[in-house]
Length: 427
Image 1 (cartoon, rainbow, N blue to C red):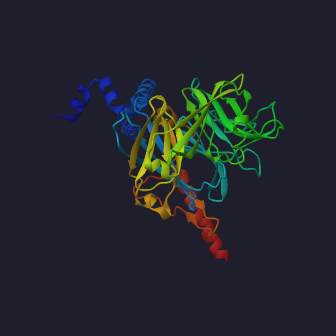
Image 2: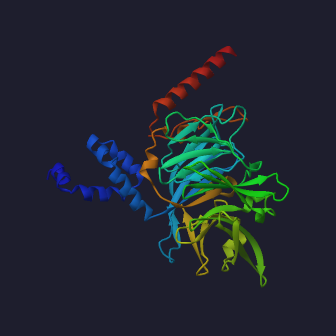
Image 3: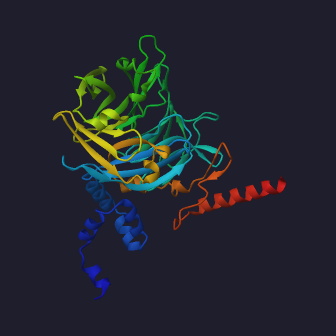
């Protein structure tokens, strides 16, 4: 039977429905088959349909940082669809080396902002798609000064913006250029170990202020209007000297801040979770909730961090370091239930104690083709080379077998090789 006739006999809407069930990487490959496929799979209708389907199967995204190698690896797995799931397998996406910033990375709507990535010998701000590995390097904010920035997303205009104190850069606006915004407010500085969060087009992050009456404040930046507001956060003054335990979360569309501690409950060790919710932005009204989690031997005996709150209201806690077995915990405050899910597939190297990595989790990740198609994004960040500060060696020293390298990466590799040969001759 002629395969062409079979293809023609399938209704177009059925073909599109089939493709909405594939990963975005597979869709990207099918686009290269012909102009017809490219046109169909790049259409606004398909992009919207793909996002709609992807939203029904949210994923938990893992960014794993390996110390000593300045290396990041990205994985994801489906979030549980019911209370009876006990295990899940991760899918590996991409990895890269060169992150040397002391400041935490920032996540917004499928993209991650790294304040400082060393590409060859140049420190560069990088925004990357952790699923596809596509990335873009941003110009420096200020000469001889490293970025401390965040990434925000406006869901109405589908617009990403990077924010570094009073400097703003709009992604996808042609020339990548920072603009200065006048800020009328108190002097403050970002807390290096805490991540910001973008909720419904508003970016929030924790800062230390130099005011006499309070040490802590929340900086609120509206991505669309670029309006700043400053929210009193004196309730976090006890944590501001060491804010590593604080995590900003999206709690049902409101800003939440969590902190966890191990406590003794009737002679047994358990976990106490505190969550402050910003109920009124204008009045700076915070409401504190305290939960004692159901007893769980694994959770009570390991280091963990809060990954976020799902759209269904589950507070997600991840073990802080990769290991075997590795668990993620879903706590539902309303039902007072705790579901533990074993995560498999990180690989022997990450599961070994000597070569483990620190895990950063992001909840409710959905694949969005409009994000993947950002025109200013280059080829895979896994092809980027960085120079080791200890031994001056470039790594990674090769590209994975069968991987394609774009012309820009090839030109860079040739240039590096030529410079090293010339240096060798001079010596």
